[in-house]
Image (cartoon, rainbow over all chains, first blue to last red; front, side, top):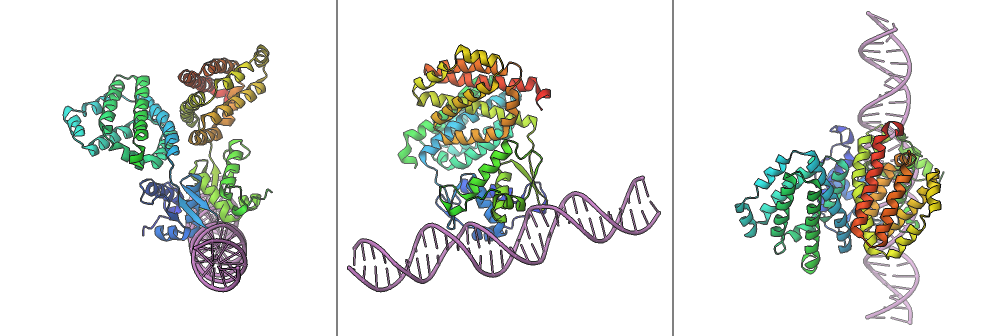
Amino acid sequence: MKRFKTSAAGGGQTQLASLVAELRRQISEHKISPGAKLNEQQIANDFGVSRARAREVIGALEVHGLVERHPNRGAVVRRLELHEMYEIYDVREVLEGLAVRRAVENENPETWKKFLDNLTPEFESRIAAGDIELYEVEFNRFRKAVIAAADNPVITGMLDSVQDQTQIIMRRVLVLPGRAERGLVNLKRLLEAMSKGQAEEAEKLRRIGIRAAIDDLKRYERFVL
Amino acid sequence: MKRFKTSAAGGGQTQLASLVAELRRQISEHKISPGAKLNEQQIANDFGVSRARAREVIGALEVHGLVERHPNRGAVVRRLELHEMYEIYDVREVLEGLAVRRAVENENPETWKKFLDNLTPEFESRIAAGDIELYEVEFNRFRKAVIAAADNPVITGMLDSVQDQTQIIMRRVLVLPGRAERGLVNLKRLLEAMSKGQAEEAEKLRRIGIRAAIDDLKRYERFVL
DNA sequence: TGCTAAAATAGTGCTAACATTATTGTCAAC
DNA sequence: GTTGACAATAATGTTAGCACTATTTTAGCA
């Protein structure tokens, strides 16, 4: 059992916000599975907070769309339906494109040149040989840098929300045949455009990359879900 | 005092969700002003719900970013700062563009032709003469149709959230010199593209329209805020 | 008058107890 | 085996009371 700081314990973030962030994390990583029941007393016990606080947390998750509550019967973690996945990805496409555009406008092109320089022939052959984790780590490192450079908390918050809901499925997509290779091709072109300060071209390429990933999901739906 | 339905009263939406929607509406219309204090017992009294429920509502508003809570001291409705306005508008630009693109793809072009046909020379001269409400009503009618045709609840939810936070200020922008006229020119071109089924062109034009509105805000900041 | 310490205040935070409600389980009748 | 009625159950929903905490106010003193 993890003891959650009371509200007055400093650090700027309220107890509620901390708890919600933790539950979101657990739900998004499927540590709490879709379909799992959440109950106030259990959460209060698990996190060492009052039942009143636990209730607030569940309420916030409800409003956030992550759980479905049934009055007097408890809450269930929502399953994401496939059509929702596509809806979310439409939004992700434009938001990631926007983030990249702003990142290019805000940040020294040398930053992106450094990422490009990491994509050595050795790196590429390791991806081709199946080292998907390597690709994932590098891609996530790049993506974090983009979001930081975009410097827009609204974008960040929305993309976090998007990520919460889609990450498990998209990890499955990442291991589909040739996904990582195709992703790498797109990443190289994207980084080239970014290294030249081409903000609109970068936005377009990022969007193409997102669209390509979701197209792979469509193609292999029966295998992923 | 408005008596809020208990959770079990049917209609699919939980009491919490209804209350949150109502508070969001009041905050977004400045019926509850930025800087106003919210307290649990007052909300419980005002809406005829338990203090526990009121507390949940405030918690949800906190997580939603609409209020700032101070442990043991209460909650205050957040003031939107100008830089946040611009951050939100970046996101709005891409989301509204996406909505228009999807609407064009999903809906019969005749729909948009009908909106275009409403923009008669008489309509235009009334806008030029200062009938801003007419422009606002027609534009909002069009916008609702777009969002409905886009048929993506994720977009809708995010745009609702964006609207909550920006609508009061953007109404002030709407009465700036020439704003409505310039908006109308963009709307005509947009509807022309939509009537021809040009989804990408429509997306581009919608984005230009949003960008133009925010540019007017930048130009007249000192008068608007 | 200005400063400091103590008291008061306002509101949340927590706990306990009981009420309420929707669903599930059991049992008898057909 | 199925159906319907009733009881049990699980969890939330509400209320009440008190604890706790951060801020504001007040009183006393230099």
